[in-house]
Amino acid sequence: MKTAGGFYRKKLVAGMPCAPVLALVRYASSLQLIVAPMSPFFESPAYLEAVARLEYALQRHDRVAVLTGVVGSGKSTLLEKWTAKLRREGAIVPYLRTPGTFEHDFLWDLAIQLKANVGLVTTPAELWFEIREQLVAYTLEQRPIVIVVDHVEEIARETADILLTLARLHCGTEAAGTLILSVDSQHLHAFDTRLLRLADLKIELEAWNSDDIAQYTQAYQAAHPEANLTLDQAAVEAVSRYSDGLPRVISQILDLSRLALEANESASVTPETVEAIREELL
View (tube, rainbow, N blue to C red):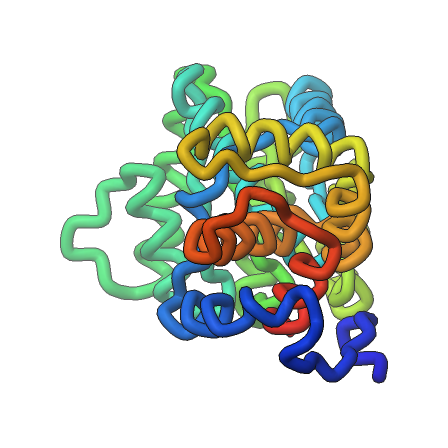
């Protein structure tokens, strides 16, 4: 049976090779043991290409750049790593993760991250004034400004209006900033067309191929030497097949493989193990 996610589900029985790991997989899933810190960060070629294009957008002083990719492709991780780097280099980088909030909350978050003098400011109009004053001050100081907004597919109409004003008045020239918007590619059709028309560059974060997964597996093994986790080529191909090359799913599969095999006193991940874990994650 094909699931909504495009994967094929088969009924698993006790006699299958993957059966011994299922109980622990279910236990780990129920306790939410699949967490990001368990997995090492990996700069895949797709990641490096996307970062290079984002840097290019800044060098050109683009007004708006749009980063797209399917859910689980690593857009948020990329933006977190990249914005941290920009801040270390002295740039002003507000990173807003919840654009679906109310207009006042969005403006407040932006003002705080810009270190605007909000004081007793309470209304959206007052917040707007302080935000624009701070942006002008940074421009006069010749500080690079990069405003990053993640999950734009959740954006409210009034928040889109804010971003349009920012893009038109404070982005796109050598003395101003750049607006970076991240949106799930599945929702790109619903993306605010006014913002899309302003985009100078669209960047697609591609999925990992089997070579990327093999390299990531090596990095994962190095990060968890105590596990002595082993994946042969067939297992790597199974991870690629069942994950669609999505870093989030790949990390989940390897995290649960390690937990399951540690309990099972085995160090070898088989395609059957990968299939069982993916079935459980669906």
